[in-house]
Length: 423
Image (cartoon, rainbow, N blue to C red; front, side):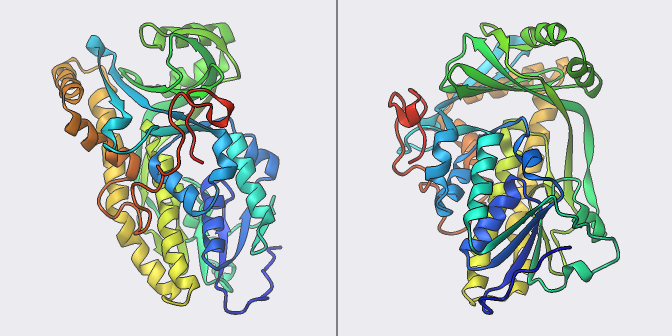
């Protein structure tokens, strides 16, 4: 049975958040901070939610959200900052480097952060459990039935944050536009030789992109895109065969030393919900859109959704706007950033991550222009950091908010030399 929050404060709007993943947790914390009473339900238990083996590349927009939710002190020890990003195309070995100076002339490093799923998920669940305005129900039997609307009643807002296979979206009869790629993303934690701990890599290979994300203490998270068939065979095969294949895929000068955990493979697709709300139900994060994890853009796009939910939910919580305004306006505010991010990731994938020899001159020219033009690098990097368009982040989440008070490279921030983290 789904418990309902007691109306101890009748004036507070009430929300049901379906899904206790990273995006769902942040959405619940945002609404509670905006003055809502929140119930969070998930079919999975705590151990299953925490144990996911992933690492993520976080942008300035995500750090701005952490700061507004006052999560930075708790999350900072689990973030590893990088001040450079190398973009490389294996065909012809052309490459370019993005530096923190390309982001903003007066912004200190880093330009991004790497975070491991487990500690970040644990911190967020702890904050949910400690918040008196949030009721957390893990391992819940909640299951919305298609055509039945009883489960929606009694809530001012239902937030569907239950992933790209959203049961809530399916129950509401809302479909998705999109397609699947013949690719899987293999994630694995390794030790490498020949990598700079303050630099992340995005290598465009013929079979798909390969990301190297520095995790500190000499370790690196690899996100390796390959065909679905090859990905399944590599993950299921002998560890020695996997290690040899990965060593061959690494860029020149980078050597594989040790594989630290068992690799996992995830299918890759692009999708956009046909509607971002239906009735009092709002589709958030991957329940609304999903894309190739190129450059970590998918997760950061989800968290920009949360930033807008927070800003708009705050107006509702203060009684300045009705919930119907939030539902009606949210989709318009998120449309441009969402569409631009999906198109950009798909376009980069089709341009760079393939073996079409006819595109080699175009790839070479694009990387050469980026290498020799600081303004062009800034033009490319800023949407990756802050989102697309002037309204990608809500008013008050200014571009400089994530940079204030941050340690610089070379300091022993968080006990890790060369790993600047926000304070």
